[in-house]
Length: 226
Image (cartoon, rainbow, N blue to C red; front, side, top):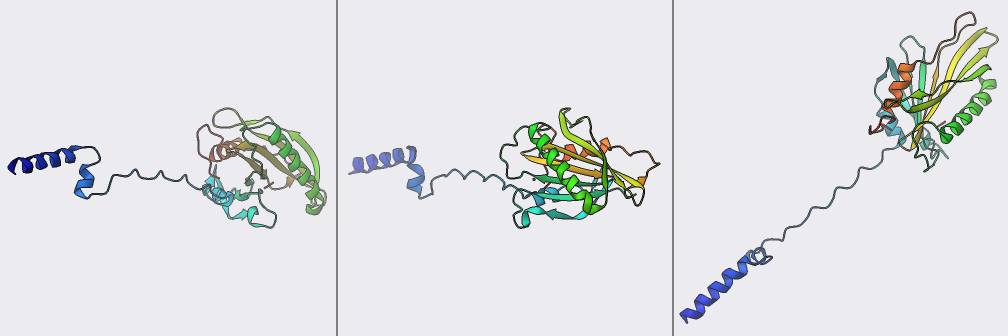
């Protein structure tokens, strides 16, 4: 009888040492691997535009964000935000959108940016009559590099002539591709007297926008309209 008791005790000790047996014998729950964290949900274009800073190269943000996606048939048109100098010129609108395209995989300038810049030109031409100006000239500018040195934006420079006021406005349209969407910048100076020299496209503003909107290598984007 004593030998049987000793044998049972030895067997019980051995079972406690076996893998997978000790926890069950003690009544504890088996260890589990925690589930992998879900990837963060993509932010809407309006939220991404809304994440841009209060100032860019001295220009102050002008609320509110315009959410084109929320409009009827607005899917793919993204969102925009305005910035303005304390002096009133220049003033800038930044657009982030993708036009429902999934092939915007090549960053910077290229056929997609060229086609979008041509679309912007048509829109500017179509708006001229209602806004009371005549396009005096359109000039293609040298590409603007981003933080990594590669071309980020392709730009056209416009002069808008207002006959009644005898003034001219200098305006620019720039387009590039970054983070799978278009980044478009419309920058304009207030109208000047025809005798005043043309105002240039401010490079510090454009380079800051390029960095903030994801053209820098490995830099996360902040934030897809025309």
